[in-house]
Length: 177
Image (cartoon, rainbow, N blue to C red; front, top):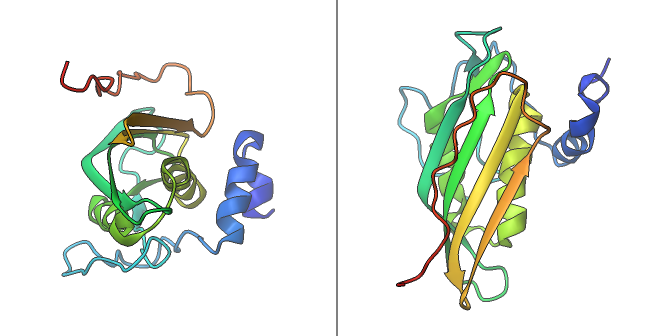
């Protein structure tokens, strides 16, 4: 059975997008490339390698949260920087993402041009395609450019029953009021 055929129906299209774009999880027999090593920032998200390690609590339903309050990418029209506070929540499956590799992956967007929607959803889809968590959601809280803040939300599917799901804790943009 292929990776795509084994996927839950709700994420098959997302997995297809990841598989077709060349993103495949590395075999678990590979040692992490970044953990305990000196690593440079990848030139692009496509060049970034995400490391995954075995879930130390496989079979336990729990939530992992990563917050990136100073995330940046570039506007695809003007080339000007865009800033966001990203919050990634996931319920691990058999693997967890190694945090240093995630930090380098997110940092690789500094020179990447993309609309807020594409960047936010693309990060979530890549993590789901490679890590195969039980569930994942991402909130992209983008700071205003042109006077309009844009918040982008995506999740792989409804959260598993019994998962403690705290609020993402990012207040709506209020300006100077």
